[in-house]
Length: 335
Image (cartoon, rainbow, N blue to C red; front, side, top):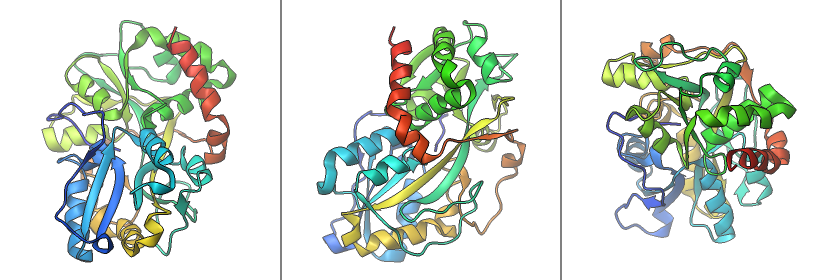
């Protein structure tokens, strides 16, 4: 998910809205998403411009810190939510989102190219990536080569991570640890805890601390170095390759029960899977596009870590266990 940070400003941590020109309800689409999507350097402004030109309508982006907070907000608002589209959930949240009864099946959309394929009648993927520990090569000469190395390594080599209660990357790390350590996950968190500089609500805050030099490592994505290569012409920041493999994230969007009454919602999902949206993703959200583009990826993407193994729990497994696993994490990290 995400946009990068030579010029990152501190995240507000509260919902903000990109204001649009006045429009009737029939000509307006409201999209809830996460902060880095709507930032001036993120995909939001370009997506807004392209879709508004195509639909002759007004798009209003409303953002919160990160993906888990996004689902929490929509569930809190319930059937009265103003969101027509929710963009920024991932596969770890889709089962819970469906169970809320606040989302409806989508119409025809273009084919996708996500790893392992995708078939879902409610949620549509728009990008994907792999979680990774990104490190500063000028501050860390011997990065971890496995999750075990990270957990059991030198406690002076600090890392910034995100909170699984609010952040999809934070939840991704929790599931990554669980997929490797299983029932021994609490012991792994206890070993990792001394290395954690801080736990942030969302990705933007964590990556901002990292690029400011507060810690030599941060939980981010294998695609993060592409930003620094393309935008800053530096290979200073790299993703560590872990022997156990990396955890996959597929980001999705869905139409709410509110959006079911707005014809623009279905049009937006169809637009989202097409080249005008997908072309924007690689060099603004710095993730892999989930659909077809009409131009090749920047060669920088060929130089990224390629996971030795893809780790992923099913949405149903996550929905059944997320609360218990988060409580398990919280019990260790709060001591």
